[in-house]
Image (tube, rainbow, N blue to C red; front, top):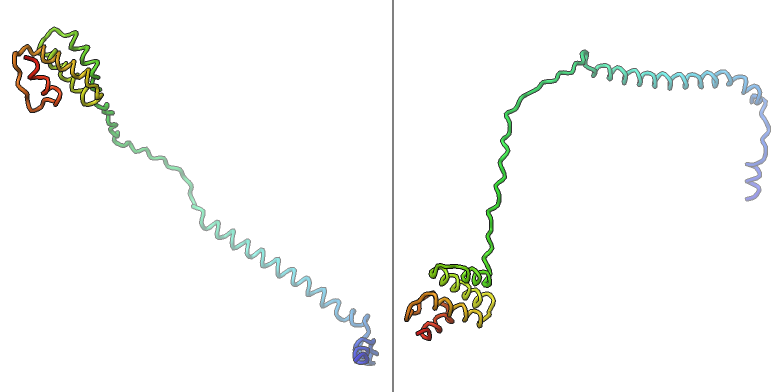
Length: 166
């Protein structure tokens, strides 16, 4: 096997009809040199053609006359709605405030109504039974009726105090 490689790798003897390296170079040098120039010229011509086509396409898309026209259109004014103020939320007076207003009032009907509202708030909101009892008794006293009858909208505490006010 080693002998086969030696045959392939050994230098060959030149045949009498084969040209020498110098003769081969002299014959092909001109053709190779000319082919290289031709390839360079072909690539350059292709690049120039590509650039020329692109430039021509750009020129074809440019408008011939460039003019800026500004048109002013007057639109109808847009009405701006006036802001609607939110409704004033008047907080419900506290039971203490109602009691104070009743003490400052001179009208017996208003005094009775204010003590009744204060008693209802003490009873239902604050769960303060002694103050509710006091306001209900002041309400009954301001009514100045000898024997007030229980009404359907009376609270259980006011209804229980009415028979005692005789």
